[in-house]
Length: 158
Image 1 (cartoon, one colour):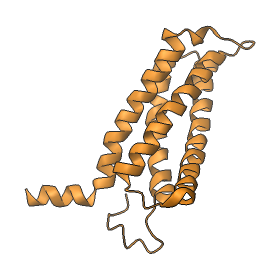
Image 2: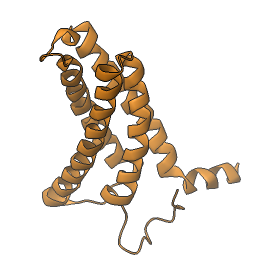
Image 3: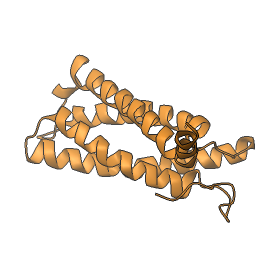
Image 4: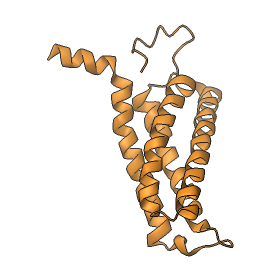
C-alpha cells in the first residue's frame, strides 16, 4: 500500500488533471451538444459556413473553461496565487492559453466538419483529446508552475 501511495503522491497533479480533465470534457461535450443540437444552433448558417456549430462551441468552451479553471486551481495544481492581483494574473494566463487551444479546436472543427463533412460530435470528441494534451502542457509549464527553482514541486516532469 505504501508503494501505491508513493506513486500517487509522485504523479498527483497528473492523476488529478486526468480526473478533472475527463469531467471538463464531459461538461464541454454535453454543453456543445445541448446548444448545437438540443437548442438547434446547428441550423445557423452564415453563407455556406455552419456557424451554429462554432457558436455552440464557444458557449461550451466558456462553461467548461470556467469549470476547468476552478478545479485546476483548487485540486489539480494547488495554486499558490494570492490576492486579487495574483489570482487575476493567473486566471488571465489560464484563459489566454485556453483561447489558443480553442483556436486550434475551431480550425480542426472547420476543416473536418465544413470542408470534409465529418460528423460534428465525432470531431468534437477527437478535438477534445488533442486539446486536453495541449492544455495540460500549458497548465503545467506556464499557468500553475511552482516557484522559479521548482523546489515546491517535487513531481517528475512528464
